Length: 497
Image 1 (tube, rainbow, N blue to C red):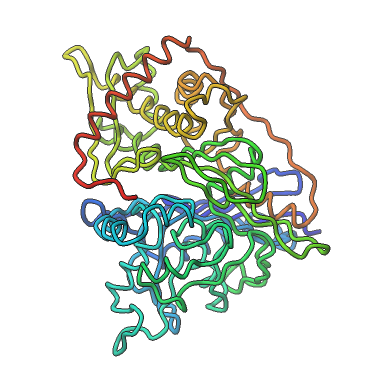
Image 2: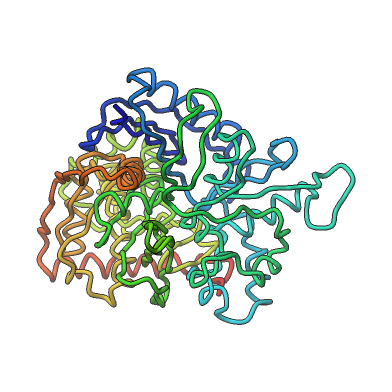
């Protein structure tokens, strides 16, 4: 009986494999850590071969725990915006994978912002023109490899580029398929959100060869069979971007926050028309799915989103600074004081993301007094994560996030009761934290299950109620806004348009 889905989640710091049964229970799992290197300030890289190898390792370890004959197929979720370039003839990477955190292309982005018509990028793609997204990274990789359009000699004649999903599908099908899932394509600065096709003006503006781009496929039923390692012979049932998969998992018609290395704050919108995002917020395609025998056409699901660069990474940085083992130890230390006592940390280490979108901004710590100790800085780190999410939701909902009935939360840091309680307090809204942190893997598994006609899965979140009165909440938010103002004063590069 085929009653299991193998969900693979390739993230920034880990690759996870989960065997999920028809009731949504995780019956086996495995994880492989991923290395991230920072060769210079603003540069964040990963090894493309390890990205693919980690998927095969995690899959094999998970499948070894179950009867493989029970597996109906594979569901894949991936980190977004990270880019790989490779030789289409040999599959050899043309350089490192440039992480979504990488900001080395900020000067290129600034030049392009001056060359393009004002507002064209956001009107077409829903995204701000920012180094976080994929296209400037892809152009940088091809330039470095000497593989831009029209070159010859020792450089590849058939370069391929793509986000992590495209690279993994290529690798896991033995080079048989060069495709990207529509939701991941929406994170590149190249996709026309309305037409769901590559925009030729932007492809040309970034200097990318059109032939190097992958074909765009739906999130469900991509029509591929995997050929490599323990995955050989298994159909690929779904592909999703990790944050989109988390939304599909537990809040597909509401608002969710994924607390990972960074944070994705996403609100699903009704209708099949791209929204006009508020200032500082992006519009994105959440998924493209649900084709029926009658229509033959999948339906786009759109969302508003704000991306925060340093969430879990802020906690890890603070833990390292204080000589602690990690986020759990940081939380234990933070819990020894009732609050940060006026200490504020703005973790703008790679610039500020949504809703500010300032590259070249430095982090700041304010409010320090002689009486403060490590516990107050630890507490300020947790506050910083919650404040950044509140910034995004205020921008997304015209300053009134407290009117929301609730938000859903997932990701590793959602296991912190201290953080979830603080988040509920600063928003004035209940926060429902997922019972299982691996919402991205479960979300893409849920989409695969839907293609198979399996019944809905129950959700059992832990709900944190807001505990701050409005005056206290607003005083905390005002202090944070003042600290953001100080961080803005450190900016060395202007905001891309």
